Amino acid sequence: MTDEYYDLIVVGGGVNGAGIARDAAMRGLSVALFEKGDFCSGTSAWSSRLIHGGLRYLEYFEIPLVYESLNERRTLQRIAGHLVRPIRIAIPVYAGARRGKALIRLGLVAYDLLSFRKSLPNHDMPGRDAALDAEPGLNPEGLKALARYYDAQVTYAERLVLENVLDAERHGARVFNHSPVVGLLKDGSTVDGVLYRTPGSETPLEARGRAVVNAGGPWVDAVLAAAGPQPKELIGGTKGSHIVVGRFDGCPTDAIYVEARSDGRPFFIIPWNGLVLIGTTDLRYDGDLDTARAGDEEVDYLLAECNRVFPRAGLDRSSVHYAYAGVRPLPKRDEGPESAITRKHIIVENTTTAERLYSIIGGKLTTYRNLAEQVVDRVRQDLRLPAAACRTAVEALPGGHDTASIKGQLEEAGLLSAQGVKRVLEIYGSRAGELLEGIESGELPQGTLGDGRRVLEAEVVFAFAAEHAGSLIDVVHRRLMLGFDADQGRRHYPAILRLAAEHGAWDEQRRQDELAALTRYADSFLVAG
Ligand SMILES: Cc1cc2nc3c(=O)[nH]c(=O)nc-3n(C[C@H](O)[C@H](O)[C@H](O)COP(=O)(O)OP(=O)(O)OC[C@H]3O[C@@H](n4cnc5c(N)ncnc54)[C@H](O)[C@@H]3O)c2cc1C
Image 1 (tube, protein in one colour):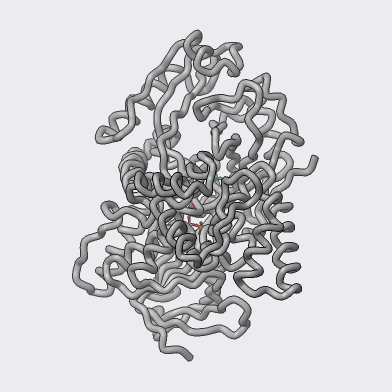
Image 2 (image 1 turned 90 degrees about the vertical axis):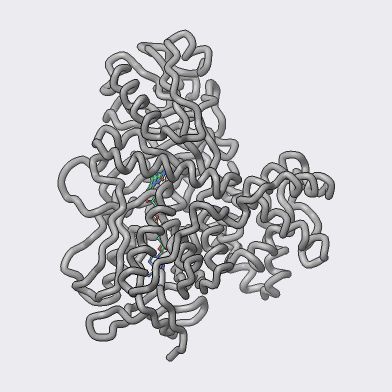
């Protein structure tokens, strides 16, 4: 038994759950957030990492969704400018493509109009010669023009989610990482709380609450199943895969958005994290959600289509540093093409299971903040709480404040190379100041990892002490973001293990287990040669 009692319990620490917890805590609700793995270890980590209006959705006349997304793009640039940055996207228009020049122009004019209050430039459409000057690596055969427009990119979605979690906590929320919800509690017909487990313990604990939001992403139905058999499934997930390769001969400077020849689906080739992210696919998926990975056919499809657009690239499976896949938590639709399933979010109150139990279906990284606002409005109304203004669109995330003086301090400290300073500011934003303070006070170690002076040793300890990391996997893949380097951060394993073990006083067995788990995890993203 427990005396934990909350206004709102949020199940799932992906972008939506973290955003809901932040908004609710900022509006004065007592909140608990439970994540079964690490924060942002689900779908939110496996996307194309674009904060975009979704040009493609115009084809399905999802005008309100595009408008909402474009608005949110601007908001996220404002509250998290260190994480969300503009990116130019270029669409090469080829003779015989399904989408011709006129249709693409129409779409981009609509995109410009729908983002009329935007902070980014309008589109342009250079002709063939100028297109080849701008992107000389493009396949010239049948090229008619290049349509260019702006969107935004969140290089590290993991950090966006984490900052929402940390800000929720700063506003009083209790956050439980590596703590799965294993049951739902009811009082008559109303949800009354959850049963959850904490790391290292098999005994479930109770947390009572007046409302529960199920933000389990593709696991939404699994969370509901904990309350007993359900009348129907809410989620019909589709799997999307990406491959990550090094910069290749003829590599684009802009992100490229182009139709695949084999099936006419548009896909992205995106400069990202010093590498190139290529994706995605879209396939109905009913396999194990915890182990979804890119299939060989998806990898070959993405390689072949990229080679077609950039003939000098010469990519094959040996070019792939790693590949990842995520399952979109889309509403269940058994019929029709995957790409036609709406990307709009839906908030469902599961009254057949329990009142005050809300499940989130669909949604995008881009629109998480607005979704959270709607969910919290609804919960407050249902709980008959007095209205309270949402402030998530105006208050910056913890690292989203001005970094000019911190940049100066980092340079003055002389610990990092220029590249290292840039990296630290892109990951921590203004929170880099906390790292510096910790180093200066002697609470955090002073050295750097390896010889590139790119990564602070302090970051490893900080990840455990201030950022809820629970394992080496969390540190490498979702705090320091080294897991997305070409070598998946492997060159730093010994130093990170040493620092983590010293900080946590790990015994020899724990050291071995942590390193083995990290290696297994990184290996699972490798592609068979
Ligand atoms: C291939 C692909 C490309 C995409 N590209 C983009 C893009 O470019 N831009 C964009 O805006 N959107 C994109 N999306 C969509 C976007 O990534 C997702 O819609 C969004 O991340 C969903 O977030 P979520 O929080 O609902 O789900 P998740 O991130 O999956 O979070 C759910 C969390 O719940 C946890 N959980 C599950 N069960 C339990 C339990 N019992 N107890 C506690 N915790 C539990 C999980 O571990 C998980 O962390 C893409 C999606 C995919 C798959």
